[in-house]
Image 1 (cartoon, helix red, strand yellow):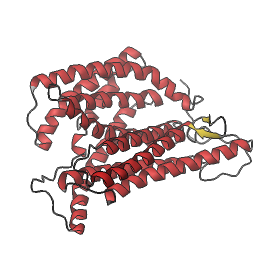
Image 2: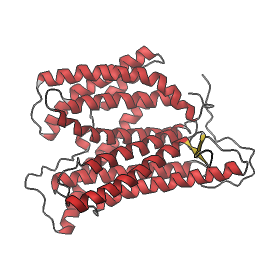
Image 3: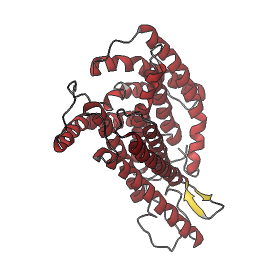
Image 4: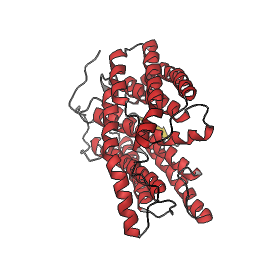
Length: 369
């Protein structure tokens, strides 16, 4: 197993170093932008629960939009900088977003991580215009799960996936792994909110728990396979726990503060429970620890770990909602079905990630895990 250098390599390149060519400033900017989007989503979710309908121009929305705008502008700047560098005959550092790929028949050279992040931001812009039209036609949003909101969340998911690729390409740099872990934890947080729409499928199965378990297994094994780093899963689960702790306090507080500033009352039945952080699996750190102890570089072991991870999270999620959020006790059969289906999906995700993780490493193939 090849060792990974801790210092940045020297390039035989006479081009002066800039903020973009150094790699980490643009990567940190994209990561910060994704965090702003996550905070905006948490705030907006809390607003819908504690206050009610909203319009297009609210502070949570503006924070959400600013995150995607920053991510898109930074990605565009990196693509233009990489294109200019390639045309000048300078060597392109693959640690800056991964391998550069030709776009529009070679008109641009785009590092694959920033290409994905930029595509997500462009999609967000389109859905943002859709959201503006939606508000003009229908007025207030009574619920969070409107069509444009789902599109916006999916777009942010794409941007966060790009952020993971950006940092994974720099996994031999000191800032690479922490960024990849943070970006993966944010992606898991966003995906858990998206999975709430599964409630529409009915109550025969604990669908949200099933989805949460499956996605948790998928992303934990993805970061492990993509980076090849031991304890990456525990670090990702720990990062999510830290984000959960911070936003658990922040979301209800800032929602009440903003409502008071606008002279709007809170709903009569407000319990002060953070809407989004409460759906994130609280058992994930312990589950990830067990997964780290069991995982090996073997596809069948990946499948086993995926099944155990998804099944355990799916089993715990309904009871977490009952204890923490005060929801009604889940039906035993619905939980069992969620666990069984979650284990099957988690196992399939583990098998897939063992191979797909190697594909993801090709964002910068010369760095071996």
